[in-house]
Image 1 (tube, protein in one colour):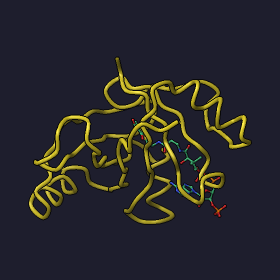
Image 2: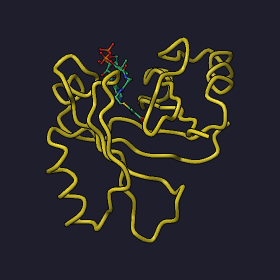
Image 3: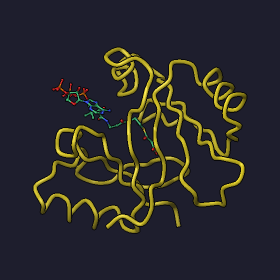
Length: 139
Ligand code: V0V
């Protein structure tokens, strides 16, 4: 089902401060940044300088508004790991396969993720307490 660990998402209050921390402390580099209105996030993808394209990245997620998933997470948990994202080749097929195993998917059909990827999520209560994202990269 899963072809790679695509990214690990960290909820942060201040995106610029978090990018600067990852850069100056660990030497990570920003590869991409965007605002996703539907998801209510301003986000940045970072990678280790020695990694090739397609390697696992870190996603920093800052809230755009108080009613967003990330704002709620920060209120409850403070900054920290928010999600684990698995790469799949077909997000609809992967979602259907997991539904057939009795797992709850958050969306009936995929939504738009980073860089025009298509995404869905497994409910954390059905995935060992971890919010699992399924991501099908743009073609
Ligand atoms: C909530 N819970 C979590 C969790 N968020 N557990 C692990 N990891 C998380 N991130 C727990 C929470 O403590 C509750 O446990 C239980 O799940 C249900 O909580 P709830 O109050 O019913 O639900 P909410 O309102 O906290 O919402 C949780 C969900 C929400 C997962 C439904 O965050 C959501 O819709 N997430 C999907 C969208 C998202 O995360 N977007 C931002 C990233 P107890 O207290 O009952 O034990 S956008 C993104 O990733 C993009 C654009 C991308 O990658 O391309």
